[in-house]
Length: 294
Length: 275
Image (cartoon, rainbow over all chains, first blue to last red):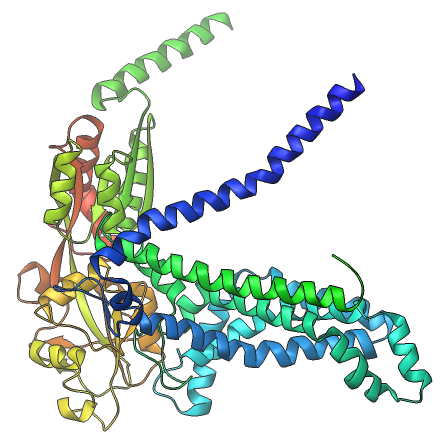
């Protein structure tokens, strides 16, 4: 009786564990089936390196380089905000904050992660964009920079909480040894704790970036949506995600345009996959270094 | 006591029969309407009013865009497809392959207003000027009689029905300058224009407000009257596509939209009624 029950549980949980794999396979297969026709119809290099995106004109242009660069610029800009804020608050929470402050600060930063992205977008449109427009005297406030700022804030909890974990993984003995040989707190932090947790912090940054590059609603609302190759952060851009979101509803099913939106999804999927693989590799190295094993 | 109960039942039954005489009933029918976000407010308000009269009909109204609506009509997942553009040749072919005969019902008119920031002194533009601004030939307001200020061109996503209509009516299908800001909805365009002093954008007539200024196009004001009499050039028809000529509950609904009551709701939603 007992054994049968155990078996049932085992089978049940195995199935559940594989359910996410099933979805992953389903999504990947769909992206490939719906996206690959574009590479035949347009050509892989013309698609990825093409400089103009005019999908609905006669004849259409399906060049997504402006969209890829739009995504990368906004993400790079987001790093400028989420790394100092995220890593800085992780250091503060781990090294300087007392127990009470830590108990307040950490949940507050994590609440940021729970705010729906449309709310960030709305805040961006109503408050941040007009502010940036006036501050920098730009013709329009919906720019890559506005998107970067919003994404930077959105990615901060990811960076902060993984960095903080990395810092707290540094064994107590490291710190004690450093202090014992006469190093002060600052020296211990910069020469011992920080290097020991550097790979964990890098992981947090990369995961933050993959969060930023995949974010859709906020960038759709605040980056303006102009499909040009960006030269500065202060001009409107059209990231890949917002292109898919904005155009999927109106694309004629089965057309090259429709397939090209899936192909953009496919490329985005690979970019995020690369980010995640790098993060995973760094994490493994990090664990080995601290002697934590797998 | 007993007698009064019978009386009530009889009265109720008579009332029911009486009502049934006036209103055809459709044994618990459900209707799915999908498509253009431009037509959505019309479909929504008409569906509500229709269901008030026909309590046995359940109508679900969804957006998604003209393309989605027509695609759903083709694969049979909706009964009525809202569209702010006529069906395309490619879609007709696809429909025929699936045994669907897309039938066009014009339900309302919509005017596209060209909007600028209220502080902009420019009051009117010719279609030629609008075209030059959107294609990038003109990029400073001083070239069309305004202040020395850079023009920020705001357009709709090139896949939207509003864009297609504007592109056809105003731009002769020429390409919008690549650095134009593309917004996902009429509301987003109006909002961006209202916050950008040098901006030009376009949106449905219903989006004109004190926050944005509608300019005269070829000397004609963007008003309902001018759209109905055909003098305002940037106007279009709005459609509800059905599979074959409407019949049964679908016909009842389309007839309702076209009725006086329905067209009143069209006007209330900010569009131009056919009658």
